[in-house]
Image (cartoon, rainbow, N blue to C red; front, top):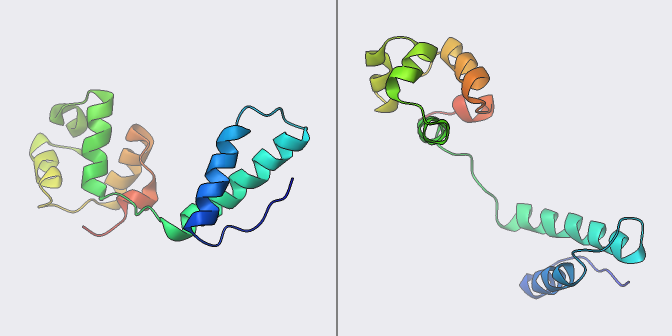
Length: 118
């Protein structure tokens, strides 16, 4: 097992290819250790070179509502009046701290996403 840092796209592709070869390696074996180390190196390279930005708070709410099969009237039970939900989803009204807390606990959307400016 010869593992080197991932410094460029070629190194990255080689690491991905090797990871695919040993993907089913058993934990505690030499290949299992190699798999674990490669996973860490690939994750680090991807985080540094392909960062994923947090989603827009309102889009995250809409997405989660869709996942949960919720309608605007269902969200009104969480944040208040139906008209307030409409204003929030159209970005005419900002989320309050209380709303953020309720949305976090009910829809399980991270607070880091909900507190962003939009």
